[in-house]
Image (cartoon, rainbow, N blue to C red):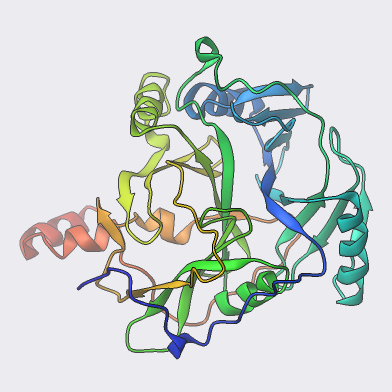
Length: 358
């Protein structure tokens, strides 16, 4: 079927963004994971993804992209238990915005709490209405940008964190909350022949993404996207992964998204946390740049080329620490690579593969 974008449609009853939000979030900023083997995770993120270590101690590593002046966009904390996502982080514009956020969140029944976070200024924790664990800060210690220090670049030479993807049972409810905080939808995925939205791409900065929601049981953390300079950087990350024993970390891609405008490759670290390497997105700035609809069906893929995502990409994600999972009751989901290939193989081959558990 044709999965090219269509004009904005009121059929899906999208909420309108609040152009005068109660406080000013500027961008997706950072994420905090737990990891069982810090040494293995350090190798993956520095040698394959290409992040640099800003600071570390026996139990925590703080990393940043080569272009980032902020102290960290990824924090790894040692755990003896199940690896989880502790928080996704957003920057707000000023300290006054933090105070406004505290008042507004408490007034909305979301129980925001001040916490101490190393290398950050005042930091505010809350859980959004879906249960996603979020933190806000206005300031962070600085470090030198290294984007022109080419001799220090490793692996994919990731430049900066760009966005997160979170799986939630109700994409429209999640979108409505964040649009009330000034986020705008750049693109969204509607199910063909229905008024159901199963994916929404929201932004505060001037590209299509800061936070992405897809319909699955959740909330669960799916991935963070890091921008690289070129497709060569993505291929180099894959080559380095293959040479350093991380070949199995390459989960999906390289390929070319259609609905999100970019080349991509998804990789999973030693604990299963997922990272996307992608090229810079298009600009979405003007107020009359309306959301763009992409139609989906169980038989379609929104990639311009490349296989659909594997079953692991569709179903597996990282749990948020201490957050109750809400199960999705509706069956179905996007086509997987396994289904796509099976539909094109002779029946006898499919039966033989099934007999050996493939």
